[in-house]
Amino acid sequence: DEGKGKVVDLLAQDADMVCRCQGGNNAGHTVVVDSVEYDFHLLPSGITNPKVTAFIGNGVVIHLPGLFEEAEKNLRKGKGLTDWEKRLIISDRAHIVFDFHQAVDGIQEQQRQEQAGKNLGTTKKGIGPVYSAKAARSGLRICDLLADFHQFSERYKVLAQQYKSMYPTLEIDIEGELVKLKDYVEQLKPMVRDGVHYMYEALHGPPKKILVEGANAALLDIDFGTYPFVTSSNCTVGGVCTGLGMPPQNVGEVYGVVKAYTTRVGIGAFPSEQCNDIGELLQSRGKEVGVTTGRKRRCGWLDLVLLKYAHMINGFTALALTKLDILDVLPEIKVGVAYKVDNETIPHFPANQEVLHRVEVQYETLPGWNSDTSTARSFEDLPESAQKYVRFIEDHVGVPVKWIGVGKSRESMIQLF
Image 1 (tube, rainbow, N blue to C red):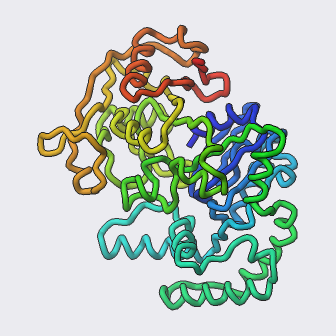
Image 2: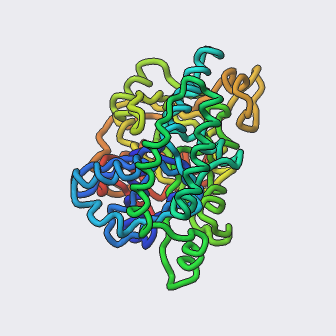
Image 3: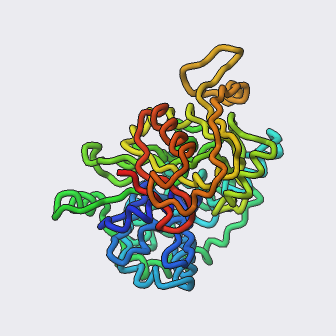
């Protein structure tokens, strides 16, 4: 979301390449450049830098109409996207999200609602169905679309029929869709490369700064998130190697982006959630609305159990702490430091949803600072209590905070070292 967008935007200033390795247009970040606000879902947000090559890796799932619409929409907003098609490279091994995947996503959500009384709260962007098709080995990839179109059409028809037999209410205009897909071929061709070869050259040619932008959050990871209320890909650091085709020894710094409080969009367990004035204050002051769905985000105190868990998986070398200024008006601030289940402190983050719902968060209360931090441009500019809040997080997680965000603009990201 916008916190991560801003960190990526900051790092992209001196990057040569910015990559996406997983997810699709279910993610959303806002980036402000020269006071123009751009919205990104599928494009790596570093693409606003004219010197950057943006790379969409094999682990990303691509809805082609979504990709071109997003580019057009941002083109109309300002000049940050001029010549985007010359700066974008797409892996030929990336899977394609079809309109019927999106339709199926909607039908599945409806069925979950009817059968279980609750859905997963997906973005209905077809992400689950397309990753399912990929795992079931019935998916179609960018390389298939650009090869023999007749063979592609045949496989598309088979896949469409499979979905129609599973979901009788599903309507697919097969011929119409194929016409649209064929139209994308010429536009796509110049952007598509063998992603593995491309990454290898980038890593072994003249030294490059390569930034990989994770989409979604650690707690939405298919393996490590609050399953089943997760996305269908690995949004933790492992997704970088599998989603770009590069070895782990090439992963250098790993930066975790975390708000000064916790938010969650959609349903699923949220132990530190505040369904009260505090939660509402954070939601309204933080303008916490999902970029992709427009849903209000649920808000709560910073949960260090979660953050430590994310660190165990990702091995953060530094943190970016964003939206600290949202806490400016609070007289005191709580931070979750441990979980209790049945009055026993548990040393880990529970895998099971039912257990997670029964967790009692143990909080430490820290003094607020009751003053405006949005004009701070160095750590020393921050009130003492705000400095202590930052240090408390560092000491607890064991990771240094490298950036502190205190506002929307690029200048409001304080760099500590």
